[in-house]
Image (cartoon, rainbow over all chains, first blue to last red; front, side, top):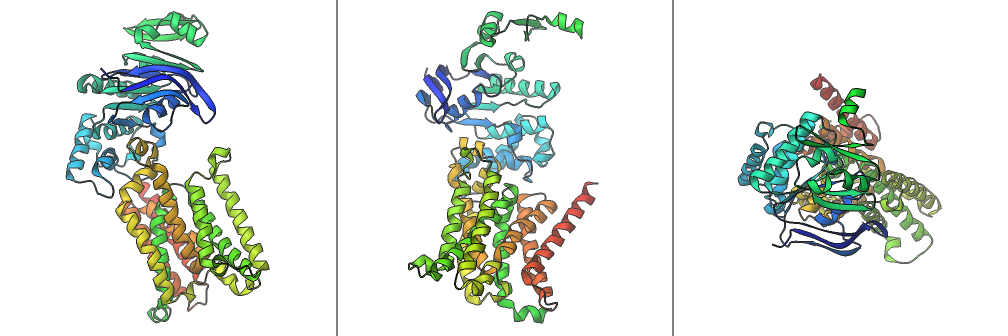
Length: 257
Length: 275
């Protein structure tokens, strides 16, 4: 089966500045991939190459023809000064389908409402986007990505700045969309502990380094210690894997607290 | 008041055309947080006029030296393209600093060039604007420029809005974001270059910012912002005009004072509403 996205010995960067070299991996249909790493490591560079807004400096980045991305940007990049209702923002996900110079119709509005129902916030359709909480705003942006009927849902730091409850709800929703709708999902995040318990595979991007594999391949002490360059423990709490630095156990941390 | 208005109706019509066009484009200027691009473009426009007068005074031959409007248009559109392409952000200088540098340099160049232009004194009013001097022919020229611009913005409202609101998502959906951004700046530059000839830097800047701010304070939808901004631009023009003539006040600043008062009332209304 042809992968949806394929990186083949790709060198990525901006102008003459290389950020990542010799990157090779594929995103097959039905994947749920977490692209994880600290700020500045190159996650956004990889993402921009996938979305086509940046070309590789070398090698190949191939995207299956006709592939449609449902992009969920970082919340803070969506400007809250615009007085837009949630349903109007969601309809933007269909703008390219509506066509140049044409206005959204009843069908577009109905689809926007269905997308809002799908993410559990139909009652917020006529509220101002700027008046919503972080979690509600994120659901609205996910609805906008879904309304365009994407092949791949791409989320950029979807839980940034959220509390534990909102984070769990948003990641649960994304997991649900992947499981129920068989949607291919690419989730970019700096929080390994959050992402690791929801995704199927992890691509770990650390300064100049890149490693991709299943959650089991990545979330083990040997791999993470090698990648981070410091001793790393992987603990299990209620079936969830938690990465702890410096050989300190969760119990030990708890005792010290 | 009506009698006063009827005497200067041609000038009022011109002011209304400028006011409406700038108020509409001003909504994007305010929402995109590029208000000083409007000021810098207006200043570039005046520098273009000064350059044409200066070159004409030196006896430099050529079409542009004899047509201040054409020179103004050329300089303003070059500035619009520069800002539309990111104002040299890749050089490491923050875009707002580049806007400030452009504003200061264009203002100084305009003053220096006009000071050394042989017909400088006669044309000084050209830089300051002379809203009362607008004739029917001028209004027709303004209409010929602003009506197509407003039509473009009406037809492609959805595209301009999307690209302004969330350019990254628009890009992923295949929108040519840079081209749409350039189109916005180009239409802005076009309107500013022509409006500047009659209204001057200060009044054009007012029309680009204050009506849209009033709209943003009072309205709860994009349509509402446009409606309030246009209404505010019209009201400020009519009231400012009507008061400036019997009280012997300069019309431009009178219109700006009315716009400011409306923005202040809108701000108070918003504060009261949010309590």
